[in-house]
Image (cartoon, rainbow, N blue to C red; front, side, top):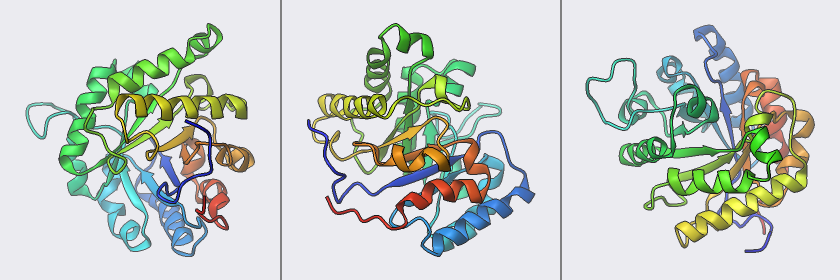
Length: 263
C-alpha cells in the first residue's frame, strides 16, 4: 500500500480529549470552539470534543447546533448492570455522544485495560451506535528496543473487532512517550507508523484499512500541527492539553481551514 494524498472519503478529524479536566464553567471554552467551527475556522475538518461524562449532556445542544461532535473517554462493555462507577456506551449515547475514546495509554496503564478489554468495549461502542476511537502506541523503551511496530501491531490486532468498518472505527496513534511531554517523533517516524497501521488494519480486516481515519496524538499543538497534519496517512489529530482552550485547539484545527479534500 503506497502513501498517497487523502482520498475524498477520508474527511479530516480533529478530536479534543479533555481527560479529567473541566467543570461546568469551562464549557465556555467548548462554546468558543463551537462558534469557531460554525464560522468555518476548521475548514472541512470534522470536530469532536471528548469531554468528561459529567459535561456531555450540558454541552450537547450547543455542539449539535454547531455541527461539533461529542465523545466519551471510555465505556464499559456491558449495556447496564452492577458496575459501580462505570458508564455504558448506551449512557454516553443518551447523553449526546457519538464517539468514544478506547484504549488510551493512560487507561491501558492506569486501569490495566488490555487488548481484549478494548476489543470488548469497541464492540459495545458499535452496539450503541458510537464511533470507537481506538488508541495504540509504544513506550520510549519499546521504541528504543526497535519494537514499536510489533507493539502497535499487536494492539491493533488484539483491540479492533473484525466487524469494524470505516464508519465505526477511527485509530489514533499516540506514542506513549510523547503524550504531554512536548516531545514528538520525527515526521518520517509518524509517516512510517501511520502507513504500517493502515497496512495492518487492511491485512486484519480486508477492505477497511484504506478507508479508516488514522489520527496522530502526542503533544500536538499549534506550532507543530501544520507539519504533522500534512504527513502522509495522517487524517487528523487527537489533541490533549491544547484542546482545553479554544485558542490552542482551533490553532490546530485551523490547519484545515483552507484545505480541500481533493486527492
